[in-house]
Length: 420
Ligand SMILES: CC(=O)N[C@H]1[C@@H](OP(=O)(O)OP(=O)(O)OC[C@H]2O[C@@H](n3ccc(=O)[nH]c3=O)[C@H](O)[C@@H]2O)O[C@H](CO)[C@@H](O)[C@@H]1O
Ligand SMILES: C=C(OP(=O)(O)O)C(=O)O
Image (tube, rainbow, N blue to C red; front, side, top):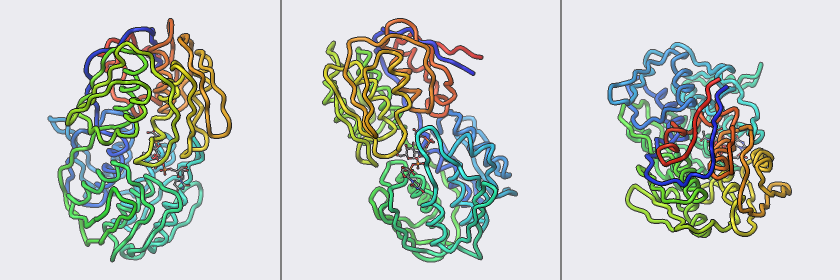
């Protein structure tokens, strides 16, 4: 298993390009199952999760070709299987995103139940209930969701009792080919949902309200090919901004959409960062000052993202003062705290809150990554700790951060991958 060895203390300076968003690229790859025609996707990030989803499409008989300009052509006209097997789903929960498109287009889908993961139980009951409301017959047996429908799915009014990002995306995709109108209420408003809707509209779908909590979809008989460029990754962007805040120096991230970072920028400014934004860049400079602790409550977009919570616990670890982070989206997303404590973080966990008393310095240590953003937080801690930090199990990190060691080294960090 690969590890990252980081020698802390280097100031970070310079510019880093932000990759395409994993959490938009995954549903957009899945939506190519809705047409026999070729969909061309650009700005896909080079990440293990993307390779897994392309592998899953390949297993089903879908034709995927990498073009010279690094865009990818996906053509589901050659599909032969409607199954997402356990071996792939267990490595990536987002495989559940093929359920809606397979069912809507081919009337059949067998998708392994994703099960829980390090950050919580993460059920998919709302995906299943929504498909049933659209007329699907669904049984769960042998660990698989076996779904079918006679003819087309039927438009329906679906209210989500909890805001769910992939649930919204799955039902949005299913509704594009349903008979009649579907209304999704209390829908997720994340930019990744809007990006998926943009791609679907380019394929001929009729969608209104993406980005608000009510999305209306008028089903059409068929969708066609298109070209779509995946939007920038706001979580990767936020992670590099926190790196700049805690390591000092001046970091500019480019190829981003600054508005998507609003909630994160508010907290970075509160922490004392000087931030400037351009049309597609954001620059952070602490001007030699130490960060100040901030209080944070995670919630669905446009509130503060749960996927940035772990990174801010590192910021609070070395801040002036005491800050509390409340996690309201997932029930078990503090696995990184125990590892950070091994590096000197002073943390008190009470239920879904963690209060951290800032200290001047963390100390390098061997630490273990438990999930994607937990891993990112350990890398950030390693960048500012005294001495060496060895981050183990970085396969989590490779799911979501393209070329992280090259990008950080480009900013001046001392970091290298140890293969093994
Ligand atoms: C691939 C992708 O886009 N992943 C993101 C997506 O995950 P994902 O879409 O899996 O997360 P959800 O938005 O569905 O989860 C939000 C909450 O709803 C609950 N829930 C969800 C579905 C359901 O059927 N029943 C149910 O109870 C979950 O347990 C959780 O407590 O949104 C999360 C919340 O912003 C992010 O952390 C993930 O990075
Ligand atoms: C939790 C995440 O991803 P996933 O939903 O794919 O597990 C994440 O991107 O932080």
